Length: 243
Ligand SMILES: [Zn+2]
Image (tube, rainbow, N blue to C red):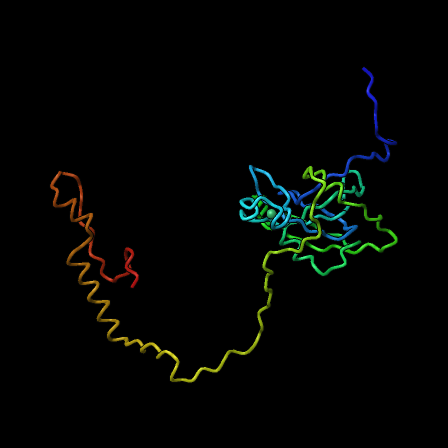
């Protein structure tokens, strides 16, 4: 049977643009062509459905909680082909917050998942470089691609991220605070060498008197085995007597 190829020249195949979320591994390198555009979704019967806004969503579904996602026209670096491939990036609420306020267009980012074990792990974003505008492809329209993703034409895009923002502050290096002497805990009492020697002697005497439990048990069992009590340790250096 003959196959009809709908592709263009083999050097530059054209394919439907896919939606790309940040995978577990390996990290992806993407270049932004356009801004991130927010969308609220609900989780229904195992998949995401778009939120139509209060009053338009079924009440139960709308009250079930929302999940924010953001979409942007990007190009992904395909290293084995040495090409940038157009795709739509699906960003998490955290990633959108992290990238908020940036120009984004022309910026190249390395995106990965923290510890790379579960898809629910936070996305880690590392800025790589900014490509000059003259070398950045035109932004394409992501709306039909997101519409196709949800199989819906009436999407409410450009919804702000409702997730409470992180408050990010750094530690401040400084000399230690001054604490009045009467607020400080009392220093530990100086060790008395005479008392310490008395304690040590008492412990040694106790060991000599009671011996080691295992040896005592064997001797008292009277079963004929060649069990001899442990010799008393004269200088305290034997065994595990580190006092
Ligand atoms: Zn809703």
